[in-house]
Image (cartoon, rainbow, N blue to C red):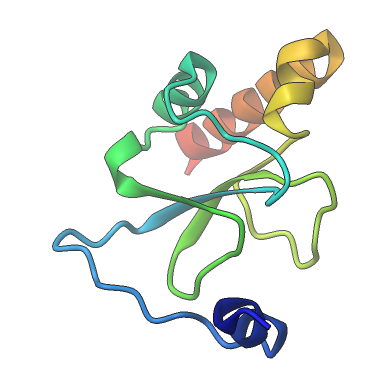
Length: 116
């Protein structure tokens, strides 16, 4: 058995070298899907919610201490703590309804921020 798969099955997180700059935000997505880092939609959404791309960690699993700003997983896990919860990126790009739902969430989030 692969050592990393064994540790993952036991829910033990792998040791990682800490970046010099701490990234306080996280975008999570499905392990089996591909998240193109250069997609303009990702940049636009992050800019609309006031988060710089270099402040975000992109991963398949949530990490303690990071605020999840966008959940792109197909199967959502409770409690939902993400600012935005949408369909996976491929579905958003292919379906206008999924894109409208995402824009509605962004609009609602921005309204809440302006009232706070």
